[in-house]
Length: 224
Image 1 (cartoon, one colour):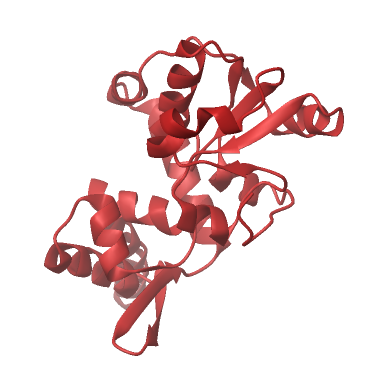
Image 2: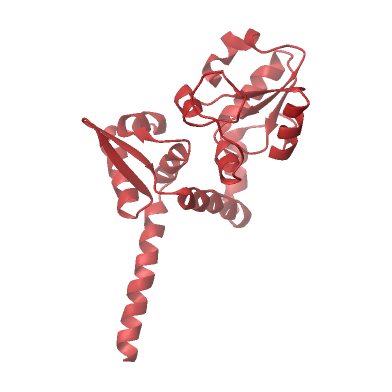
């Protein structure tokens, strides 16, 4: 009886470990980060993650076998999405735990994001500023991610277009920039560009991933 119980326990913990193994890849975590913004095809994910199609497909199959993502077929295209909000929460928590307990993460974070000297505000502060009419909210993610879900009222200008489209932003109002999440470099790059052009730009202290998980209002579609 004791031996049977031990084997059953081992099978249970091996099943738990299968999920951990699926997450034990930086590129698979990057794919989860992208999918947290909305559903995507394999081609789009491969391009966004800097992977060839074969490698991207293999990583996605690993995530699917672990139950972290699901698929749907549209003609010859396969679309991937997160299996649920709990997967997004796990991904967000994994990053925060790693930052708190693994010495290499803060240095890697700082090297990636860089220094922009920007003021940061919370979600609650952003809502208050928008209600007061003091703030323009700027989403600098790719258009497809904006259409999949964005902060209500946010203006969509992808970061790679910002230098040419900066005149679309009113000069007299502060600009609050956000992107995918707390560890997304796009908002940092946008703030550096805006402040370099003399604009009053600040950052949301996290991003769309955390906004969704906090069950804040989300709009979809309609470019602004």
